[in-house]
Image 1 (cartoon, rainbow over the protein chains, first blue to last red):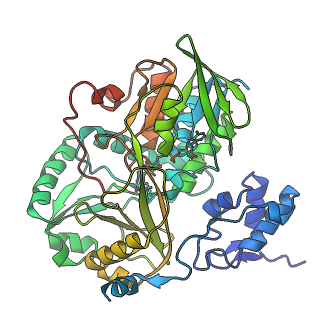
Image 2 (image 1 turned 180 degrees about the horizontal axis):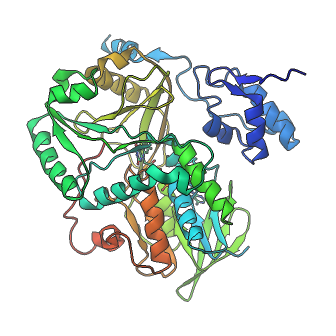
Length: 91
Length: 381
Ligand SMILES: Cc1cc2nc3c(=O)[nH]c(=O)nc-3n(C[C@H](O)[C@H](O)[C@H](O)COP(=O)(O)OP(=O)(O)OC[C@H]3O[C@@H](n4cnc5c(N)ncnc54)[C@H](O)[C@@H]3O)c2cc1C
C-alpha cells in the first residue's frame, strides 16, 4: 500500500492518518472531527470528504455507514462574494 | 452513578470549571452534555477576547482571563495549538456620542491597568489600512486583546480535566433535579440517575430551564445571533474590527478566513439558531461600507448560536441564594468565551469556599433584586 500520507479533505489538507489518530483518541462523531481538523469546513463544505470520513468512522466503530450521522449542512451552497450579495439587495 | 460535583454543560464554561476544581484536588467530578462538546454557543462563537469594556465587572473578568489564555497551552500542557493571536481589538466610534463614551471607557480601562488608547482616524488606518476613513470619527485600540480557536481551547481544558480524572458524559440530557428537605439529592438524565449534592449550571442557552429544574428563577433568556465565515486569504488584518453603532465585528483568523457577525435588531427570544438571508444581506452591506476590500471575498458558510442574555449584560456567577450546592455560571450576554478562565476560577472558589480572586458580589444574582442595575454594559454587539 501507498506509504505516503493520503489526503482525505482536499480543502483543508487533512490526511486519513490524522482522522484515524483522532478516532483512536475518542473523537468519533463527525462534528468532533470537523471541529478538531476542519474537515467539512472548507469551500466544498464536505461534499468531497464527507462520505469517506463517515466510512472511516463506521469502520472504526464497527457499525454500518447509515448509522453514522452526517455533518450539519449550512448555507451557502456555493461561495458568493459579499459584494455580490450587497449588489443583489439593491436591485 | 455518584458524583461529588455534577457540571451541566460541556461548553467553555463547563470544561473550565471542571478543570479548576479538579486541579484543586476535587475528585468524582462529572460533566454532562446533551450533545457533543462545543455544540452550544462555544462552538458557534466569534471567539474574540477583549478587555475594552464599559463596566468594571466585565473589564476585570476579561483582563484576568486573557492573562490565562496567554499561558494556557503551557498551564494545561496542551500538545496541539490553541491559535492564540494577540493583535488587538480596534473599536470604531462612529459619532461624537460614541467618541465621548469611549473616552470614558478608556479612562476606566486604564485605571484597571488595561493598555487601551484612543486613536485618530489616520492612526487607526496605520493599524488596519483597508478601513474606510469615512465610516468612523475615531477609534480605541487595545493591543493585548485578541482571538483564539474555541474548539482547541475547549479541547485543551477537556483533555487536562480528563487527565485529572474528570468523567465526561456526552449525548445525555439532564431532565430533572430532585431536592429533598432543601438539599439536592439526585439528578435524572435521559440515561440514568446520578446521586449528587452539588450541581453547576453551565448550560449556556438553557440556563433558565436548568434553573427551573431546581426551582430557581434566573433572569436570563436566549436569542439567536448570526455569523458567517469567508474563504481564507493571506493575512491582511491583525486586529478584530468592531463597531457597536454600525453593528459589526470582523476578524481575520490565523487560518486566513474572516469571521464576521452582527446582532439582529428586535430579535425574538428563544432557542432558534437558524440562518437567515436578512442577516446575510445586512452583514454584506455593513462590511462593504466599513472594510470595502473584504467585499471581494466569498462567503463559505453562515450559522447561528445562542446569546444567553442577562438584564445588565454581565454574567451571573454565584451560588443560588436559596439552595446550597447549586452554583450557576450563565447570562454571559455574548461574551462568555473570553471570560471562561475566570468563570472556572471563581466557581471553584465559591464551591470550595476559598477567598475569591475578584469581587464576586459584582456577579451575584442578588444584584438584580437589591441595588438597581446602575452599571449596564453598553459596549456590546
Ligand atoms: C454568534 C456568536 C458569536 C459570539 N462571539 C463571541 C466572542 O467573540 N467572544 C466571546 O467571548 N463570546 C462570544 N460569544 C458568546 C459565547 O459563545 C458564549 O458566551 C460562551 O460560549 C458560553 O459558553 P458556555 O459554556 O457557558 O455555554 P455553551 O457553550 O452554550 O454550553 C452549554 C452546554 O450545555 C449543554 N446543555 C444545555 N442544557 C442541557 C441539559 N439539560 N442537559 C445536558 N446538557 C445541556 C449544551 O448542549 C451546551 O453544550 C458568541 C456567541 C455567539 C452565538
